[in-house]
Image (cartoon, rainbow, N blue to C red):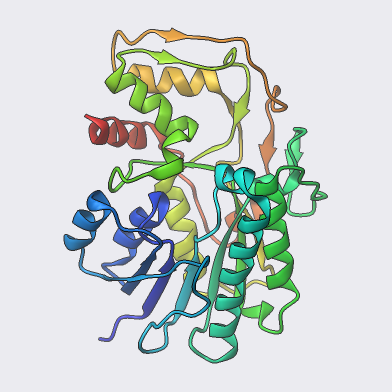
Length: 304
């Protein structure tokens, strides 16, 4: 039986690599990469899927050979990249979005799964966030993502696209060529536990984050790839609840007995617990397991 073809833009990155591995048993997977240093190159050689170069800074097309059934767009600028050069980040994000739109228009793809971010809601913090919550981003990262969301929603093929507003996805990396994403709080704390034999937070630990394990995010994408019956095209993708950075650090420290945790004095807007409404995905049958401990264990092993 012929496997459905899946193109993952950004599929050699932190989450993309895990997603590609997960789908490779059921799909003919093609991943794109912007750069391919030795660690990433070595990882790609061991996989049973193909990889192609794509950089939105210099390219507006991508040769996939035959048509693909599904495009997953993970090739959006990260928070640090967007902050360093907001205009460039916006231009590159829109170029990639237009590539996805052209593939849908030309019949080169029949479905798009686009990963956006919870940060389109803004950074002031709140008790709860549904897909109907007003979007008020102030950081270039959230502003860029919201602009791309609107491009996709206003396009003629909007009915072929699902948009997922992801929270802080956390998981064991498939390889350690992490770039800017090495600074993500989950990865940084795990790295500290292994390499420094201690965990140091830059704040007092009272700030909150919604941490979604990779396996739950992958399950949500697999669900939407099967085109469930729904009129919704926009979904929150999160654990559904927040936890303090202190609790996250303790979860990591429990996997490394004897690891001390040190706290700083910094703060941020998310000082109180908040909830992400994930009822739309749950209504389709998505059941997140919330097994962050397994991802902690795998991440610590990777850094070892």
